[in-house]
Image (tube, rainbow, N blue to C red):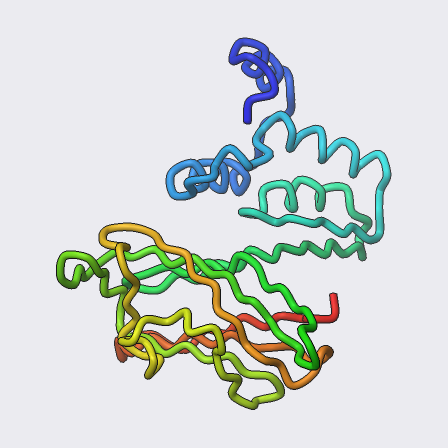
Length: 215
């Protein structure tokens, strides 16, 4: 989002300290590859964050919302020599050879005498169309575990083809992105849950997203 008109933004950037090489690269890569590039702090806002951090000279920083890490690096410029910055972002994205998946939200709640977790994800396909109305993302296994115990999906959000947790299909998703929400019954309300993605391309390893449900 542009807070200023282009001429004012240009003036501010010209009269601000330059980005270092790493920040320039992150700026460029974000605008080339990220559809939400407007969320990037950018040159001027990054210099303001750096100035505030240098004025405070903090030993600890907690940043909520990492995105591509641009603001994180700007804030880190003012840390003490032994300072630490903790950056938190729940929007976990995994990039595989033929598809991407974003874990957008995990909601844990009680219903009756059960502890449930809704897991909201977004898949983006980059290859393999299957038929006229369905997209074949890639052969992949998806498991949810708590304390290394498999959890069962209870809201029947998968298509029939997905019941064996491989060869993932979604209706009306040809050529693009689709969202899905899965619901699992948890063993307890404290133990973290692991979301495990295992592509069966034979060239990619398993990726695991661990969710601390007590936060």
